Each structure stands twice: as structure tokens, then as C-alpha cells.
Image (cartoon, rainbow, N blue to C red):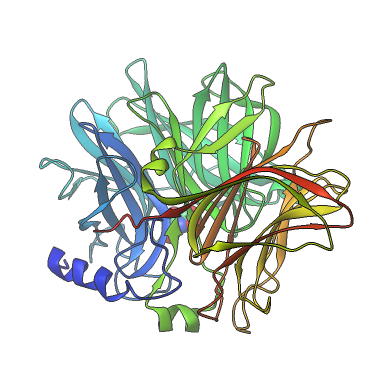
Length: 474
Ligand code: DQQ
């Protein structure tokens, strides 16, 4: 196990990397993927995460660990789970969850290979973990079903009984979530599939499932393997099977994956997800780190029965210097450069009336001559919210593209953007009901400008507020 001072030194050694996010959770160094075991324990938030402590690429998966009093500032803690040489997790401790078993913190996770389910408990306040001697507690998938994958337990308790949703796929049919039941977290019985998808529309295997009540409905989240985005279903759940009434992508881009949610002490359904890199292994190795967690997002059920998604209010505590502007006409011939803002670590709230513009929005990380720039745009004609990173970097080895998805505005509804730019990550929330995540790696040190634009007609910026954001690390 790496001593904590070493972990702190590792984190400090990367602090000058111009692409390293300042207010998004990252591992001290090396590789991070899925959030795991998100739990609030005695008031404190605990975040575990898939972690390769030895290299900035996926492999040799451990559970990293951090804690926070406010969901924003995190302290690194010692690695929670490591593969045991002779154990069922000898090739990795894959994703899972944390539950409170009458005062005993318990991790439920997948050991590999083969994919089996294991548990571990802590008796010192979540710092060290003891694997259960009877691991694996689920040694194989149901015999009569030909499965693709069998992993990522999500466990909850109802009426004195434990339930587990497991990510899987039924061969030649589609992604599926299996339901198991137990009295003691150790002996588990298979019940039935909670939901089975269609491989042609939602992929052949589902990872990292979760099922929870939201408002007067239930929500089922799955991540489509291999790395094809995260999906939500809203519908009803009768304790055995889920009946979807509505479904869609949880994020309009491809970077957000394997989210976990937590019903916190305030009764909020808070979600974190893994945001992966848009650069290759070689670039990751050169950087010494890879993968971050999203800002905490809050899920709600909107009055019309659709999914609401917004950043948590606690992020406001990171706000520094502020700029406010209002009533600016945006047209194809006028360029509005916000000269006072020169940073790539900021939060923006803007309200725009798209008028008759075909496209309008905000450019960030602009070099003074426009050679590098990233567009956050609303395409009014196509009803699409997009991030255009095709000119975000002069570097050839980073992924650049136009990514986005549907955001339909009602008649006379204005576009309300809430943007978090943190060096190489952009998260855009729109109108409380859409979210789009992307990664950029500008190469120029002066790619720090912010501009407003409209193409193919005029738009009106009603108001914009911009805050410089502070780091979450001491
Ligand atoms: N990541 C884990 C798996 C999970 C996948 C392995 C999703 O448990 O299915 O690192 O990103």
C-alpha cells in the first residue's frame, strides 16, 4: 500500500500540468475510471473509484478512496481494495457499491476473472477493508442463461431484505439487469431480469446498473458496453421488473460513463460519473494521469415526468472573481470578446434568446487570433446543443469533433446555459434538462479567451455571469 505522504506528493507533482482539472475530482496520479461505493457515512461523503495506481492506463484495478465534508473538497485516503493474489479478485477489483449493514460499512464489488461478486467490510470507519472469507458470494451467472458479462453490483435494502441489480447481457438478445435477493449479503438467490434491452438499439451488454425511486417514478441507469454512453429509463418498478415509459441518453456526448448515484442526507439524488480522456495511451503516459469524475449532478423528476439534471449548489462555494454583462446583441458581423476574462477555469451562467440566428453560443479557450477555440453552441434549426472541439487544439494526437444531441426549446423559451470549464474538461448543463460533456487539450498558453457569437442571423444575450473557479485541492 502506498503511504499517504507519497500519495500527496504524487498529486502535488502534477499540479502544474495545464490540462489537469482543478475542481473536478482526479486520482492523485495514474489511472481513474468508474466512481464506486458512493456513500455518506456519519455525514461525510466517501468516494471510491476504479484506479490503477501503477500507470495512467487501465489495468490492475484497485479501489482508490477519498472523503469529503462538503461534496466538493476531497482528501485522499489509502487505497481501499487491492487484488488478492489467491483471491477471486486476483485480476482486479471491479466496480460495485457501498451499503450500511446495520452499522457495518460493506463494499459489494466484482472480482475478476471470471466475473464473480465479492464483499468486504470495515471496522475502522471505512479506512481499511477485510474481504469476506466466503468470497465470492455469487460465483457464477444463472446456469440456464447465456450471458455476456456479469458485473457491477448495485445493492439496496427494502423491508429487511437485500436486493442486488447486476449488469449483464443475454447473448444475441441485448443488455440486461439481473435481480438477486439475500437476507445477509452472503447467500444470494437469482430472481429474474429486471429489464432486458434490444441489442440493436441499446447494445449487447449493460454495465454499472442502478435502480432508484425519483419523485413518484423509478429510474434505471445503465452504461452501454463497450463505452457507448449512459442511458436512463424512467418508469415503474414492481419489486421484480422494471417497465420503462421514457428513455434517453443521460449525457448528450460520449465522454460521461458508469455513473453512481447517492441519496444523500438532504434527500437529494446526487450523481457522479467517470469522464474519460480524449487522447491516446501515449499522451496519457506522458501526462502521468488519466480520467476524472464529473462535477456532482443532481437528478430530479420534472413536473412533466421527464428527467431534470443540474449541477449541485455546493459548487458555488468555488466561485472567485465575478463578471456580469447583460443585453448584448449578437450578430454574424459583430464579435463580442469578453476582454476581462482570461482563464480556462470558470463557471458561466448565460441566458440567450436565439432570435433568428441559426447558431449561437459561447466560445471558450480562444487564442487571440482564433487559431484555437472551442464552441458551445445551440443549433436552433436542428434543435441541438453541441460542443464543437474541432479547432480546440493544434495538436494532432487529441480527439476533436462536434458532439451533441437534441435540446428542443419551447416557443419563446430562452436558452439557459450553465457551463463548467476546468482546463481540459467542459460540462454544459442546459435548461435544467440536458447535459453535455467534452474534453479539450489546447496547445497554446494564450488559449484563454471567451467570446460570444451568432451565425446565420441575430441572437440576444440577455445576461451572462462568469466566475473564476478555485481549486478544490489545498
Ligand atoms: N469498469 C469496470 C467494470 C465496469 C466498467 C472495470 C465500466 O466493473 O463494467 O474497471 O466502465
